[in-house]
Image 1: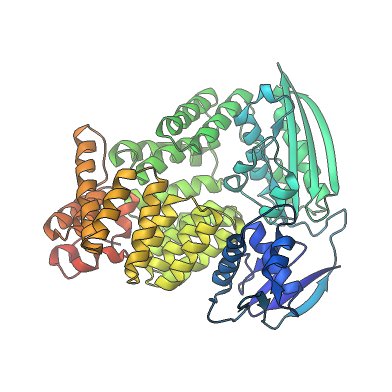
Image 2: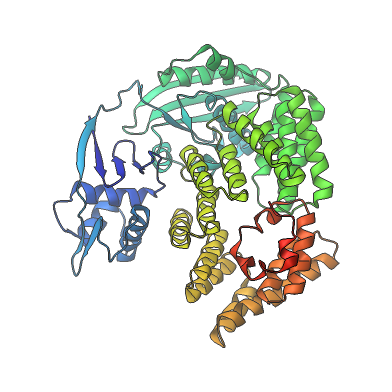
Length: 575
């Protein structure tokens, strides 16, 4: 048996290492923040000295008191209180802390070695048996393929590739990864390829006690890798004691190509799609093209091509008129080959919303994608963004939380939750959410940027400057960071943002003169900062003609409030 603690609207599951909110969805906490909360709850009858807490939370590490203070701050934000409210965690001056909320405790059956209750699983990137023979795209690709297969089973919640990619380190402890990902079981594997032979060793581990639920070794020719993946998927489902329906079995065994060369090229495309540098990102396009040229019936390969052209067009990497026609061709080809791919309906939904401005069609495609794969975090994320664009804020928040239920520790989805609150003018809540996102990834420059925006709208100007300065520093833009700081020193906030805007316009013009595509919205935002309304309106009109996501948020963004009574702004074609 293991304990479950309930207090306020929260439920703390010690064995599964989950903090659940009032909606039953997991709230993201770093491992040490979770340890801090659990220790406070388990010892709620006593005031806990800071030294005692630090030794309990970091038993083998010497840490500063600030580490503990940060954890307490995180918990207060997640639980919705602050240091003056004492709703859950009381500060005892000169001593430490005490958990003061009323706690209801009950027990639940402890998971056995069969782990019949193992509803959450993470598939980690595979590791090479010989370090010198690494094939990173195959190692991550094996995990990616198994994640896609297992995600089709509704009784299992599988962490997406975006969450597990960071655990590719050869020394990664699977139990630590499992706890950080808040899952009940972890699948780890190693592989060794020699010529046309491949050996794969796989182990399914119970995260709560470290026991092995199942292990197996497979020796196959590489041309039989799909049969190998079939066998692993079936054994994992068996190890989790999941009863499959006939439809589940069909989905689990589905293959998208029988061509191993096309499959390898697709994996390389997926590998480079996640890279941040433009040069590496472009490699994904080349590999996806090679994959579909090798197997013209490979629907997932066309989805990969659409993900490159669609993403690049939507986010201003490619000129819209150059990228969207290719994205449309690729997604239509994918749907001709397979109408059951949630990825294809996601691509079509994005095309309809961003390029065609077909609002109803976009919503229908998003709902179809969710129906096909309710666990697909990206489709929930997209639908939440769509609802935000439409101004349906409560629905957008609910859909975002569904995306977080699929991937609680996604920085992008957590950040999107903050943005949804921001655009809904719920600035205090947005600030807390952005702060929580930063706790998950302190060096994420965009989260600091957005937090600064929320501070600005809340009238907290010095805090806004600090966050923007941090964002610029993390983005390695020392020049803008220095301009911001010096401008704020004298004569103040407006001078600082205008100085940054002037420099930004200078840079944008330099890029445009070199022939680089620059989305018009960047000029518009800078001219708003300079209070040059005619120029801002001119660039907003051009932005509305472009087909990227930036124009979709003009109607919701409080930055443009100073323009909303201008007849030219009212005439903009906004959703």
